[in-house]
Amino acid sequence: MNVMLMLPGAAFLWWRAGGWRLALTQATVMVGSQVAVAAPFLWAYPVEYVTRAFDFGRQFDFTWTVNWRFVGAQVFDSQQWALALVITHAVLLAILGLMLWPKLSKSTAWKIIMDGCLAKRRRTLTVLSTEEVLSVMFTSNFIGIVCARSLHYQFYAWYFHTLPFLLHKSQLSFPVQLGVWAAIEYAWNVYPSTIFSSVLLVAAHITLLAATMWAMAAQKPKRKSQ
Image (cartoon, rainbow, N blue to C red; front, side, top):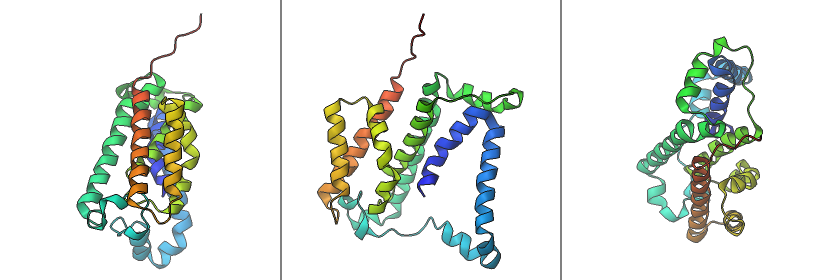
């Protein structure tokens, strides 16, 4: 599932590096490999496999939630809450894709879109910096974490390894970075989760996400050396 959270960022990078051709090629490889792996199940039980593998209407168990304990079971189980999280997720991805990710390469969304549409004229792929790739992939994943309908304890493995980079990217003062990291670590080590630990986790997530997005928005082009 966390691979799906990184998919918007990956799609952006494919488009920027090679335009529609690379994006289409990568999407074809991705879908094709999944179909190949699922072929035995699709052959035997196609409807059952697809409906269970992509059951977006399933109900999460409030008992094990780490992040939304404080909203209460009634809100947690409501469709309105689920819809609000999906909309928030989509809006944040739109802000990143149209405004912030292009700034990493000192470009604009319109230029990246047009360059991608005219990719057939290119002979080589655009070389992306390591910082741009990590920034796009990690923020794409982290937004999914922040807006996840429920985080269970094993889901910490989805993003704990990205926190040092995101904290550095946020440009928060070092003591605040340590505080945010400590709050996240503490919340994930409280079992079962409590109202306090869930509030602390969500607050730390929002602080880190807001600071990272603000730092990306304020990023200025580096001066060329003489």
